[in-house]
Amino acid sequence: LIKNAATELQGGLKDIAVKDGKISEIGKNIPAEAGVEIIEAEGKFISPGFVDSHMHLDKTLTIGDREARTLEEAIEEFTRYSSNRIGREWKEDIKRRAREAARQSLLAGTTTLRTHVNIEAGTDLHGVEALFEIKEELKDFIDIKITSLPSFYDGEEAGKKRFELLEHACKNGMFDFLGGALNLHDEW
Image 1: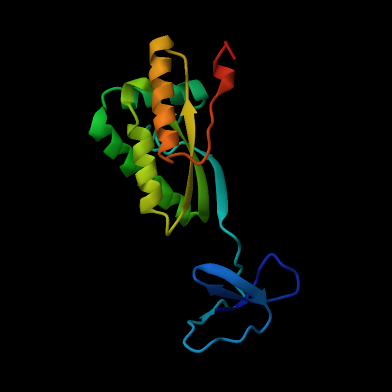
Image 2: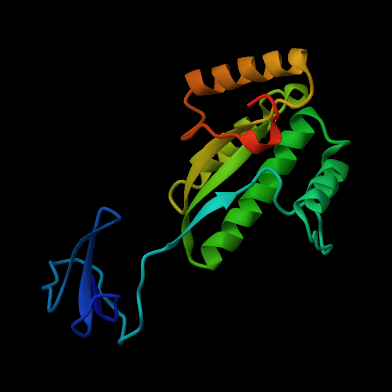
């Protein structure tokens, strides 16, 4: 039970009851049940967690201290970073960086984030698998939603492979959303 918290609701300080990890009641002078931990907020502001609706955890933290000023520069930097990483090494690298980015997001108050993840014919599902594993690993701390980001710019054979990977990931429940970047494809 959190006592005397300032919230976005009008009417002064409120108490916030939490049961099984979820807010069960917000009101004035909520009585504490026996054995319940009481946290005194002392008038401090409490708000819902932030939501980041557009992140790329498979690409985050790849350009170091440099700053990409355009999307094209960011893509070039990411391509340079990822060009010599393959297989398990790539999957573990994504997990390491995604874990750190999620930690930084949590420290800034973000409790829900939606990440896009590339599906590339040449990397199989290493990125998708990495983020699916991170989502499970961090589920008690942050709610991660995974959105597919297939791109079909490198020929018919790679496109066919990408569809097979996308289908496999969908059948195995690895995505919360299906997405894409139609503006990058002339045929659409």
